[in-house]
Length: 307
Image (cartoon, rainbow, N blue to C red; front, side):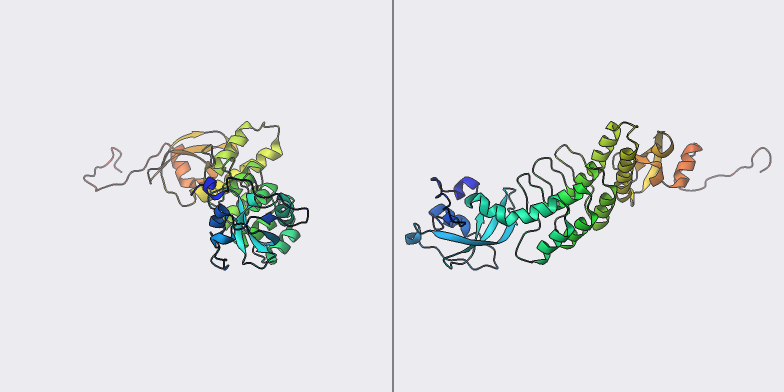
């Protein structure tokens, strides 16, 4: 069902001057929407004759991100005593939502560890994967800021480590990589974030970091070192269990030395930093040696010098 089928054709009543929202709670279309509720909360069975009744919001007592990437909805406690119902954010006065959400987003955007902890510990029905207007979660903000304690706290609270925002398709790993937070990248990888998730341009966090490194002038030494750490952390998990068939070429020098790898599993050939490849494979390549699997010994002979 699309959003248009859930919204009344006529605008809802404007909020009153008191800090509560008047809603046509039993409006025909709105009632249909409000009945899509959490199993843990009993809902009132609305009757047709009640369609013109109104109710005042007492408080928001829960939140959740909509699965259709269409923003948020909130569990409303009504002043008239009716059972709580889930309501889309666009049906609620902006100042009511802002009062509820402001502490969360302020804590996230400042990576305020103690404030986040207080909100998480409150266990008040808040969705820790709440999204802002761009579809970004608290995890994306603290990852971009490089706050490892906040990242760990949110991960332990059960947030989605691989959530993609609505605008660029960025994950927390993209944010940490793009803002050059190598410690946060390493932590997210250790926590189980998927390094293969692509953004809207088809870039993995590794691809994003490599692109930024390529565009970063060499005079920006500290930034380049940070990007190299980011790349190393992601490459480590990406290539840790992959089996190399052989090396096909080389490029670069020193710490930038890479070899073109042919994988045994048939994946596309890929340039990989020397630090992630077996020293024996590298030595054999440099010595122009190549190995193959022998099927059988079919003949022997002595060399001319008798050995």
